Length: 323
Image 1: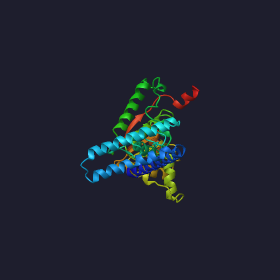
Image 2 (image 1 turned 135 degrees about the vertical axis):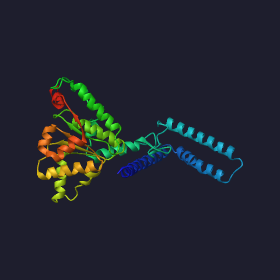
Image 3 (image 1 turned 120 degrees about the vertical axis):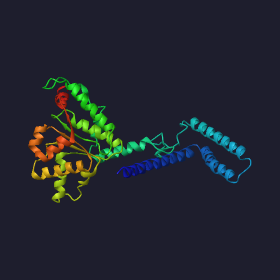
Image 4 (image 1 turned 90 degrees about the horizontal axis):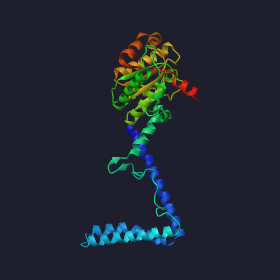
């Protein structure tokens, strides 16, 4: 998956580079029409490279002096070109390519290292293929507003302190994520930030080059149902089984049937057995999970996953009330 995305990123960058070069060529032709003297200057500049190569290939004893002369000639030609451009009201770099990345000039490499623009393109493509899409633009660790976590829990504990622990745990999880990292069960009422933090983790894990799939529990069940009953021949359920991090959002919102329980058990169990990491978010309590999903699923979620309890008030409601 990573190599496919990398190849696509390089292909897109190559298109940008070719477009920049073509646009520069058209601007050069425009200038040669408006400032005829530039045509001979451009031709002379273009001849410097082949002439330098020629004296190098024949092993000329005067290579150093002749090459220096060519360098000086090149500098004089460029100086004259810049003078003509300025006199005619053009920037001196008017006919130069304008690359999308100033660091690598759209080659994708700085020396022998892959440029960050390629890594960013890979990550961006991965965001959308993961199912997180535009959510990742707003749901990061930096955009989480801790000010909404205030007051105390029913047991008298500080909401701010408990949620600070949860947030730091999630940051560390994302930072140190690797194949076989633990699975997380995020539980708590609606609007406490579970989806936000799960998405923030997904964002960082994708940037590290791992495959991430995000989907609601209801949509996962619907996908397996479409595959099972032939409703959609293009549905891809393998990605839920094989990705390095699966985020199952809103467990408990799906229609609960025997088929649903079978799908969820097989998926959760497969990922545990194969050492694949999963994050499950739910508004249900552990007791409600036990009642709704029975022992087989409950024992795996409560016993094999690290449980992170979310507390506080509904942040979405608090934000709405402040408008």
